[in-house]
Length: 226
Image (tube, rainbow, N blue to C red; front, side):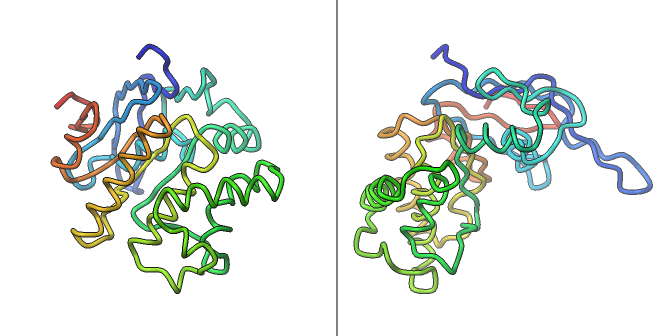
């Protein structure tokens, strides 16, 4: 696996709380290869989600670089960054962040709509992904008609519909009961293999993490192997 799709070099992030500087990440180096799943673990407040936001271009590092498809995303304009992110990244969060006024089918197709894809192709691809996640009979349902596990499956389908190079997942099953969490997680792993998409997944559960290709831990602002 020598095809690097996402990387960061000497990444650091600090905050000033008004009285002192808080160093969350100090010197993080990471390379994500094509079709690789990497799990990141660490204590609460260790900077796991902060790292994911930096890798996705949703936050700016204090120092260091984030490279997506060989481009330093923090040297891009906001419009350029949005285009690059939409073309190459998918996101799955602990809370699904779906739009309640739209159907499952419309929510899944949203990334393609932002790309300017034709309505016919959007419908076909969104329907295909919803079938893969077992929601072919729930496509026209809105969020209020779906269970928590179903909503998270819609979120996973949305993350994968545009065939991104990499999906960034922040505790993707953390808001589900154990039964639904296992179902959604297994589905996520199966789809990752089917779609050959790279995944960076933040989790507090070492058991879940060990199912990835690599496990890394954030300790004192740095990434170390597990």
